[in-house]
Image 1 (cartoon, rainbow, N blue to C red):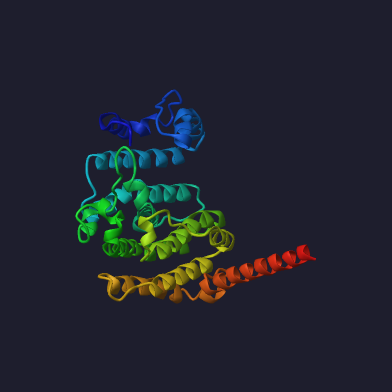
Image 2 (tube, rainbow, N blue to C red):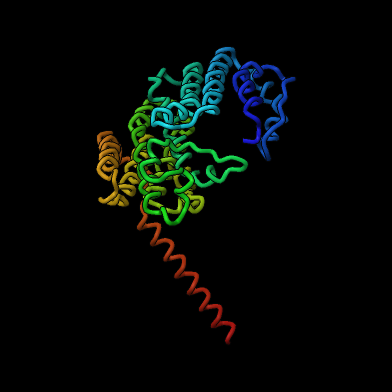
Amino acid sequence: MRIPIDTKVPILLGFHEHLNDRDWHFSCGMNAYKVLMDKFHFVSDAFTELHKSYQEAIKNITMRMGAGMAKFICKEVDTIDDYDEYCHYVAGLVGLGLSKLFYASKLENAVPNSFANSMGLFLQKTNIIRDYLEDINEIPKSRMFWPRQIWSNYVDNLEDLKYEENAVKAVQCLNDMVTNALVHVEDCLKYMSALKDRSIFGFCALPQVMAIGTLALCYNNVEVFRGVVKIRHGLAARMSDQTKSMADVYGAFYDFSTLLESKVDKKDPNASLTLKRVNAIKKACMSSGLLNKRGFYVDERQQLYNSALIMLIALLLAVFFAARMVK
């Protein structure tokens, strides 16, 4: 955000031309990003070692992505169509590019571009929703990705959502954003169900499972406007360890959709649309016929029971050691 626009736009438009130029250098960013840019010659070396078919796919997607990002530096995200277009450039194209790489490797079949695009859009929209506070507080300038067409129904300015006096409207706007993201789920399920290679499946499936879990956590949750809302480490570890098959994916999407459904307030302006999309996701999962074969379950009651049990054990141990010390 600190790079002047007249410097940034030409770099984005021409970035694809530097992929196999190990002498190209542009120092920017902070922390790990600065290290990446300072050592970009290693990226270039790796790129030139790839097969030509991979290079062509990466270069094409990078060119299109750079052009799209340059476009939105000079353009705000006003409409939902703008929002979808922006997410396409920064994430949907990643889905398309990866699909081209999978196909070029002969490990996977070609898939519809719309499915690959939805894979990227679902992840990107989840990140944009979750990272509202971080983005709006960005220095020197806020990053504003929520579309005006949605947030203007609730507040006058996007940053107004973070103020406590607007909490009710903020949550309604949040629920609107989550409902918008849910439209991509059925495409994502179709994409993942077509994957054949186990390692590619794992690479694609876990982020999607994490995304639906994050949306279920964010939905109707005012904490999105107070701090960072994240899946607990224990649940994330279970998701990583137990998402092994499409049955597990269907199970996770079914359970998290059910959790989200339980949080819908019938008075919410988008309640009926939210429930419609949740029910469509659950129907897709059930119609797969694989729910009874899954190994992953999201059971909040079991998690609460485990937490209570751990607390009880801790208290008993404390009493036991206190008693020993008295003796």
